Amino acid sequence: MQLAILLPTAILLLTLPLMADWRKEVTNRPPDPRFSTIKPVHLHYQMNWDGKINSGDMNILIGRKDPRYPRYLITQIYGSSTGLARGIYPYDYSFTSFLVKKNYLPSMFTATETTRKTRCETNNWYRPSVRSREITTPRQKGKPSKTRNKTFSFSGAPIYDLASSLLYLRSLDLKTGQETVMVVHPFASPYLARIKVLRREAHRGLNCLKMDLRLNKIGPDGKLLDYDKMKKATLWLSDDRERLPIEIRSEVFIGDVRAILVGKKYL
Image 1 (tube, rainbow, N blue to C red):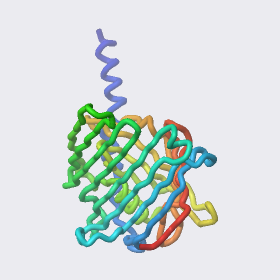
Image 2 (cartoon, one colour):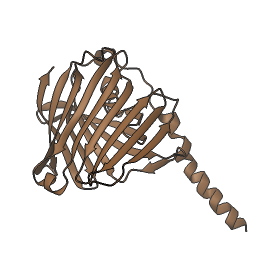
Image 3 (cartoon, rainbow, N blue to C red):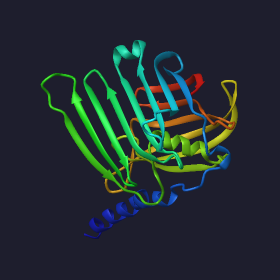
Image 4 (cartoon, rainbow, N blue to C red):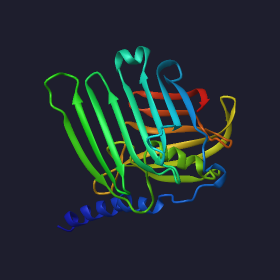
């Protein structure tokens, strides 16, 4: 009888740190004034598997001009799978972030993802809780769409989307050994991201900041869950005033996937 009581109690005590302690770790440091702004730019990346097989392309547009939205910094991320990878897994995507100009925090995020079987549309509104709507439509005629609505709240620090998390990260002082912890809600689910500055090194002919990135999903009860689709990632930011992503290398469920900067054009 005592064992039956003690065992679940011990399990609960062991899992409590995962449920609560991460909230105290979230970073809320102000930006370094030297890196608080960014010049509008179009970045083009080549995607590959294990550094050998080209598998897609990705574009990041930061500060795209649109007279309809004068209050926002508009950032787009779009691309597709190509070549052999497209034959195996056809994938097209477009993500748009509307960031408040005065602080680069997200106001709205929209995403469209198309595969051979489905088209998925995600819309997030940040107020500061995140309200999310995801509509998945089968490509096969006659099958109904599925809609999922969710709300996530966290008051300890801002909740970021894809673009705003990158802009906040690059704006920090980023000392070697420093860790940044962020709550990110890029699509229909929230995650806890831990980014650590490993060292400064030369990478692809540039002085770079090498950083380690790890993700956990945040469950409905606030408990951290393993994110099986990505084991870990390595990010190289240019170690200069721009601090642009030079390469992103991820260990994901299909293997080693890399995004390498191959083009840059100011807008």
